[in-house]
Length: 511
Image (cartoon, rainbow, N blue to C red):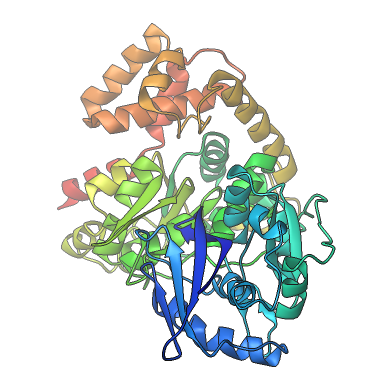
């Protein structure tokens, strides 16, 4: 009997975990079996491994091969186990020496039939876990080398199986430890291109400064989508920790990057998207748009056109900032800390409230249309702004009114810096994200502000969640104004920015 062991890494959600590939060669009829809860892709590895060995000049042992992926309990998914399995075959059959290096490093990679090592998703997460587990280095496909280096571990990049076998057998390794390069910025959409809509621009700045969810309601052509797409341009640059976390999520979700991601994600799924597409799920428990938007913006245009189940599936991520996809055999956790921005028309035809165009919808049709947006979902949106029709004078003005994106970004960065100092130690040091107990202790709301909030509550009957969110927006207003405490003016402005409640009240009065 011959036995070989090669360390590999698995991927569960967006987290890596260590896997030991044990391979045994025994007498009897030739065969190849894999145990340890492998999925179809892992079971199919035997065909690719055998072909890659033959086409790389090695021999596939004509014996009974048993591969054990330990620990057995997590389901093993993906093609990245093929490289360590092939190295284990070579070591167990004596075609390469099982050198000391194999005990101190791990390997991941997919094999093509001609022996080339192809890139795989999730390398950054696996490399980060390899470093935490104390491995000296990780062997990865050449195309994943930049990504793996971002984890701060020595990298063994290989382009084909023969190169990997020579390194495993004791050849001199060309370790790479230099810092990963940063992906270049995308062009910034300029906020000053938006004509008029001062209240909407103010809400956009508050959303960027405090991480608050935002909804634009208005007639077609008033600039709702245009405003939303300019939100990333006024967000401050990501810190090194944020860039590493976002890159890890993007990599684990199969979006290959040549280095650290610098640009914040902006995801805008179509209104035909299902609940599984938005929050994750399906037969393979894949991540959804909420996870891909982690660290950035999730924008839903034509919000009322999304299916009710798809919208309701967002309620838990908007509250917990995480997505939990539970299946019979396993549970996958995905981070989902994003700013939620949505745009909707006020009625089916879109012209309700327009100063010159007549709405053709009945009150019942409009009520049915707005009923697609449930109360619990709207309650989780801090800022709800109606966008008015743009006057011709504003549209034709040669020089746009208002500040450009760079100046707004400076104010946003200063407000966020105040929040980082206030909520130091919190995992999410923004007013919208910090936990309720911590926020209450440090918000510094004046007595007159609480009195103003009580008066607002008596008139609008806000829920406890809505009261908390009004207070959080008021805290962001104070931060933008460089005020230490929250005054009554900040509370009243924050309450005035929950406009959909007024829209519904007016609708009920008409009906």
